[in-house]
Length: 555
Image (cartoon, rainbow, N blue to C red; front, top):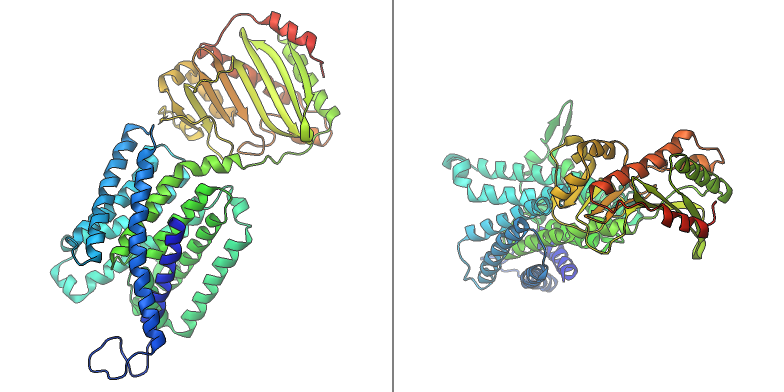
């Protein structure tokens, strides 16, 4: 439904706001009295089509809002602040829908109700990702998109308090209103590629379709500006709803020694927004595609808010982005593939032998085995014991390249973990858990996003262990009270290729340094200490390890 709405609104913007209102017919004026020459039939037909699209977009926007809020209400398990924000946002949507439907039949309430309602929706879109503890970059992106809408609502509601009566009558207030709105919109659009584009950003930047779309918009915009500057500025103002005037459009902003005119800043911003929308729409992640559609709805509706259609479509776009935000990162992480060098079997087994020898030298039974699977997959499993906690290290390789490192200290559990800690970065996510929490330790909080039971996490991971995690660890950890801890690392996906294992040296056939082996042993020790803090079983497991060793084949 949101995609259909985007197509309808885009057609309405092109026909009704951009094209028809800019056509000057010889000897005629639109429905002006005293003009004997009527418009041609093709113009009247297109005008009726644009009017139909305007009303159809309003009805479809209302249905999109209602259906979207009903689906969001069915979702359970959100923390209390998120539910409260959802109720407040839903109340704004109800007020917006009622007044929009009333406005369509000339029975709407005061205009300030719709303005306050769209401001409430924008405020909810800004706050919801932070209340839910979503990924920060996406939360910043939502805030940037919703901020101009909130700014419009504040300026419109408090016009009499912001400007004097003389400024209102002279037109200075309108010009100031347009300048502020244009600046906020342009800055948000210029930042959109950094915070809303698909991840990893390096992969999105080489996509052909977004590049072609942004280049086409830039070229068309430059051509129109050179061909007829006043007409082009008027068309932009009609389409996107804010006015800066032809004279002021050339004055612009002074950025140090460089002055950028409003019109060129707007063109750069439109090109950046076009690239962002196109890159999201062609992304592999369904949630990222929905986020792009929501962004497209906000842009296509504009910030003029001259009709109920503008209000409901902007609200539908913002809420679509809010609903897509929590799913975006998880979906993109699942689609990632590691980019690590292939390692010869002999070199790999030599490194594993050194790790096993080091573990045996530190005391305790150690066994290791490599198992070949389908499609070139090889799993190397090392079983040992640290601090009387059973430890299982599993390293998966595909076609010789390491894909993942999976370390379990204690017992594996099918229960929901008590807590998770994920290093900030683009890599596969840990088991889902709410709510998020911070420990008021800047170095650790900058490095890790924690969710779940804060007390259980603090009990398992003391300040010394947290410092070690912040200094040395990538990937994620999950803890189960009374069972153990699981730690996963994905080299080349959110973690440096050689951060834990010396993959580059092994791929080049070089013998790894002693420090590389020590890193692996230290990681096992670290996770075993966290497992002890989590209350994992501490019974000696040397007997079970010996049995495993008798069945396994040392590399």
